Length: 467
Image: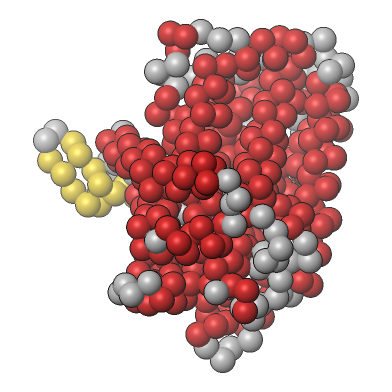
């Protein structure tokens, strides 16, 4: 089918542009921030090993499924599932499964933009030397001052969203491709500079031992977190990889390209850990600090090591670029869908959708200050209420959006895509699009998509929901 089809939005110039785009989508805060702190929390090497296994068994098959659907149909996620389902003699209502993922991408973008804005604020703060010589209490207070100021947070949130919309509005070739050709090499250079500095700290091998020491007794402790992060780290389940696949040249091998993206994303995650942990050790801090690692522990470390101000600037530029490349991939699926379904221009659609995401994101901004006492899903003394002001438990607005998107809609989106590929499209359509010469390799890929990945996603879903 895709032999005769060309996306109305344009096409990547080469297979390597798709690799840059998909890696840019995958390499976000999860790789630069979440992977290092999860490695710290779950004991280093045991978590890394389980993560690599789960990438191969869950992440790669789902990414393979999304890419295959996109290139087969050359359409946005919802329209791709509709057309391929009808071709296979199935219900066109499968398009709703993709719509779930596309809406989820916009919801994630709404709070992702706020966190991306924090990185922009920290570029300015580190550049001005605000973290030089501070102690732990002061580093925490500086972050607290940021989250307590809704106007300051809203300003950075607005700027980050505007930057993301600007790239998308310019189109696939002039916007996405040109920006990614610049941003991704910069990201890799900055990461290598950070790694080079870590080699000079005198604590590099301590970081290596921390990340790769192996204790068999810790394998099961990190299994479920590794499964969850392997699924989330490749940016699957929201249609971003699918729409990027729609722009992939027919001559490119889907299997080899997806493996290259998975390996590159994993490589960046590992490099980020190797670059950051020696700095943390050099400052005499705890590498298992959890979510506070990026905005409290690391700035504290940068403020107490040699050339810390320069290194801190490099790091937060790196975080900002990683967040930016991921953010544009979240906006593209719904923009592409509405371009196909309406007569509005790409620029106008982008402005409307970015504006909606920005507005929803204000709820996240206010969750840390004005609405801090507004709690949802509160369970106290045996009583449950959907909303309660000033409750000790429950979730704030940001917590609700994060729970809904990350723990429910994201696993469901990935499950829909991989089940659609293996069970709805059917073996022959998948074989034709993959063009895998080896029967053994095709059988393995199809088995992973049909059985292993769905089972793994269901386990991730149950564990995330239960927790």
